Length: 180
Length: 214
Picture 1 (tube, each protein chain N blue to C red):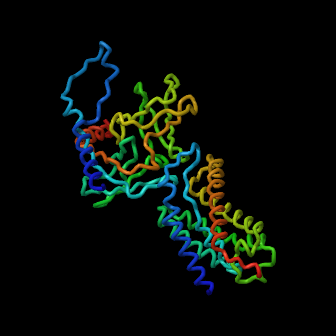
Picture 2 (cartoon, one colour):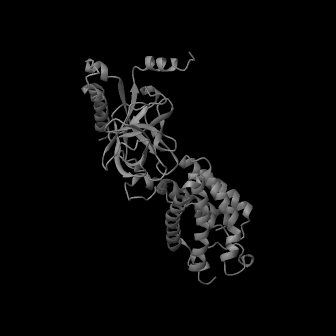
Picture 3 (cartoon, rainbow over the protein chains, first blue to last red):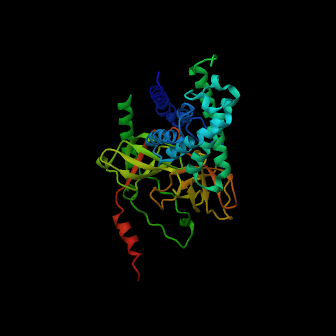
């Protein structure tokens, strides 16, 4: 499969899961655990995280904007997902350079995945990316420094859930190509 | 099943209208200085019309949450009407179209409800944006002590009718503010009533007349 087709397939599948399954989870469940804030499990950053390694950051930012604005349409939020996704597109290349074992130029069009990067560096890569995305998103959503501990708490809970969801999706669907 | 539910909702709305909202006893009536005026209970209580509606969309995880209802101006809904569930308050209508309406949920920043505790002391109830199960009641004087599980009602000063249960005191935050466990479970509210106040033009006119400088 060529790269654009792969991206579109990724985009469609992840967005369908996000919009029609995960967006409904917070409302439909009646779990009332004391003190735990309500949040939607966010899986859509995975679309940007799975772009090929040599994707320029301007392209990742544009794709991030459209991913985020689609999410905003379904969540009734004024551009907060779009803003956070554009930021994620911007910080993606430096993050990849930081955590990928080999130099980014050699790998070119390789898609980052659990089996290609190894569990440690992949986990670091998605954790830091999700942390930045979520902390920016929840800061925009709550928007008061009086509640900074609450922002961090919500980021931590939501981010942990996102990382678990991404790891599960990788274990289920990523190509197990050990040959490189 | 859906039809049965709809018909029961309408029946309930009709019965609630007939019953009216119970007017609480005035604590001053015991005093010898005041005089009670006996009025016809029906004409006094039938001020509100209940419009049943089903919730089509609802969020609880944002700073300002909205609720979509499947009834609009055709059913008699206008802006600023109060929305309640069988258990407690839900919100206030903010946008209306022909067949649908959108209500601002109580779980919103700067949504204040004038509430009172059992002895009639009035305070301000609002949501702090954190837990959808709890609200904050503030402005209760130090002399009034709420105990856990004390009920909190609407005071009747705003859009909401009097004596609708809002929640129960859960925890003292400071001397004058309390954490309130809300009686409406926003995670599983599905059917609501929109309250249309029938005669309040005279009241609005009178209240507006105070704005004119003497």
